[in-house]
Image (cartoon, rainbow over all chains, first blue to last red; front, side, top):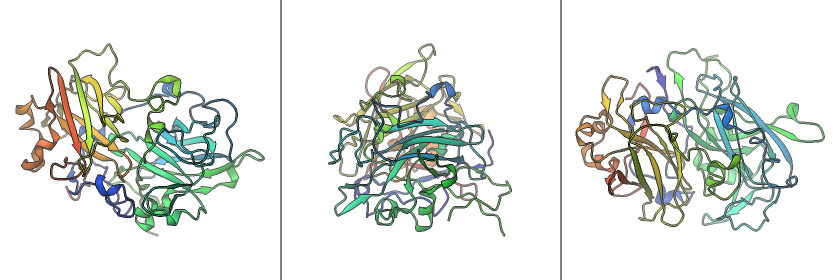
Length: 239
Length: 197
C-alpha cells in the first residue's frame, strides 16, 4: 500500500452537494463543507470481489430476468474502467440498473404510466477483465417524466455503480446516450460543471454493433486515483 | 502537446430506485442466485465479538431517509483489512427509515504514519438528492480512551466529534444516526490531495 496515491476528487468534474435545480438536494445536501483528510488505510484498502461471485448471465439484462425477450432496442455497452493515470482497473465490480424501454422501473415506488415488461428486470453486474474492460447487453431505457417542481424529463440513462481497488474510489454515476436532446435540459445533468457533462455521454460505436441484432455504445469510466509522479499520456481526456 | 490527466467521470445521484440495482433481492427482484452483495460482512466461521448496529439517516427537515443505502467497510477483529470480507451494504427500511446490521467488532487499525486508529466503521451513503456519495466514519462510545487518540477524530473540530460516535443501545448493541443537514449535521470527509492536506 503506497502513500503517494492521490485519491482526491478532480476539481470541476463533480456536482456540488446542493444544486438548486434538483429539488431533492434541498433537504439532503450537507451545509458544511467536507473535512479534508489524507487517505488512510480505511480509504486505500477496499473489498475484492472474486469472479466466482458473478453468474454467467449477470451482465445480460435481456436474459437475466423473467421469461421471454424484453421489448425495446437491444444495445451492447462496452468500455474500460480506468484510473486517473489512464491505467485499466482489472477486477472492478460494475453494477447497473435502469428503466425498461417505456421508462418504467421495476420498483415499488415507480408509479410511471408505462407498463412493466415481464421479460425485463433492470439490473446487471460484471467484473472488468485484466485490461479493465467491461461489457453489458441490455435494451435502451426510455426517458420519463419526474416530479421536480416543473416539467422535468430524465434523458435515457443507465445508473452505474463502481468499485475500484480502494474504497475511496467508490463512484455512482449515470450514463447518457449521445444525441439525446433531453440531456441539456435535465436538472440532474446540469448540476455538473459544463465541461464535465461529456464524460457521462456514451458514444455510438458502429464498429462494435452486431449486424441485424444490436447497436453498440462505448462508455469509459475514470475513477479517482493517480500517482503524483506518474508520467501522463496525452490522450484520453474527455471533452 | 502537454500531457493531460485522465479526468474523473462525474458523480451523479443514485436516484430513488437504487435498490433495484444494489439490492435487487431485497427489492423483490429475484437476481444473482438470491443473494445480494454485502448482506453479510464476515463468514460464520470468523471469530470475534458480535455486535448489532441500527443505522438511521435523517435529512435537514428531520425526516428519515427511507430510500437510501449505507455501505460499510471495516477491519476484522484483528484490525486487518481483508479484501474478501468486511464489506456490508444496507438499505434504509422504508418503514422506520433505519436498517439493522450485524457484524463483528473491528480491531484497531494502524494508520500509515504508525498511529493507532480507534475501532471504527468507514461508511458511504448514497440516495436520491445526494449528488456525490457521502463519506463518514462511526466510532464506538465505549472506546473513549482510544477515541481520544484517534488521528482522524482529533482532526475533527471538537464541537462536532460526537456526530461520529454511536450511542450504546444495550449489550453489544449500538445506534448511529447520520444527519445529512442541520445543527447536528454529521461530519463528512473528503480525501485531500497531498498538496492541500
